[in-house]
Length: 407
Image (cartoon, rainbow, N blue to C red; front, side):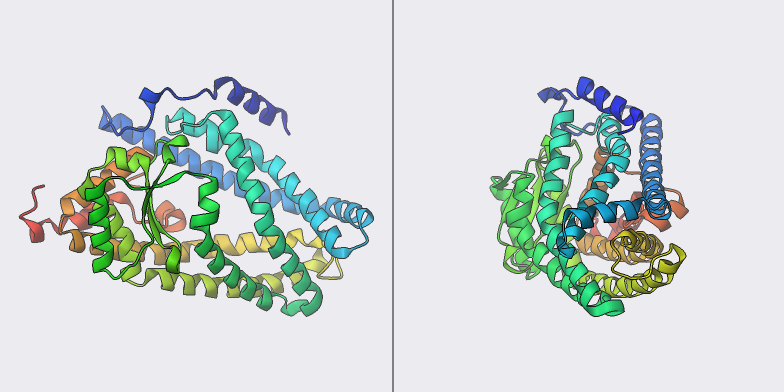
């Protein structure tokens, strides 16, 4: 770790103390709207800058490791450690992954811990933050290792056509993961309990029943153990579908506001966004892996490699996949923003209460320090949701249709 990273860890250990109960997530309107806007802009600019810097840093890291010959040394070490090519591959992946973690740790610590505490958004101590990161890594390893082995097998057996079986396996794996995550993975990070507010539960169940959306249950989870932000979602597929509500949302939002938030999420289901999203993601995965496979082959000779299954060359695949994701991200975000508008319209129509929906948007933006009016270029490139201001303007135009609902 760099000296800067070590100093940051030491700072975090000294200042990452528990947040007193009275300081935890409760919604309060900002005292000064001007100060709040400046604070929000600064927070979001910093988050974006750190995110972009992290992407550039990892890109440069891969290039340096491959171009300098370091990847060849790592591959040689892995091959010496085991004559089994699959074991050697896993050793290589482990060493390379550890190096990536070390390179990215200072920025991750700054963005995920220091910045969140600076803007009073986090409830985590440093030790809890570190444990959550470690836990995510420990959960990710058994999920990622089979995928890595399947990828290497396909690379060995199918040559330049490896991308097709890998894409098929990725589709099956992702679908299965979405089904099992609510019961097997999410509980490793949060405690889920069935919602105790009977009136709210009845409203949510009625909302889902009217839409033909059958859920396993309505659950709250202890989101406040990590953050002061608020959120709610539908999770799972098939029989594992459930509604989950952050305790911060339950504490700070009225039942009318929560109903409109969930009606928005339900709108994604009723407008077919779930399956459209799966279809689009599947197509992008297939196309992305195909293009990546071709770029990978072309780039091999440039770096002095002869074989596609050369361990030392494999980091180039990650580089090309990252570039493909960066290029296609604005297109995916454009589609996502269209879906968000449609879900907003469904929420307003279904609840008949645009005022509650607008209040929920404002409250979510303030609690999460979301930039309500990002620069158009930033919104186009990086935002999967339309700006809060645009969404509010659309909702405001619906008020006249629901005059009976007090503003």
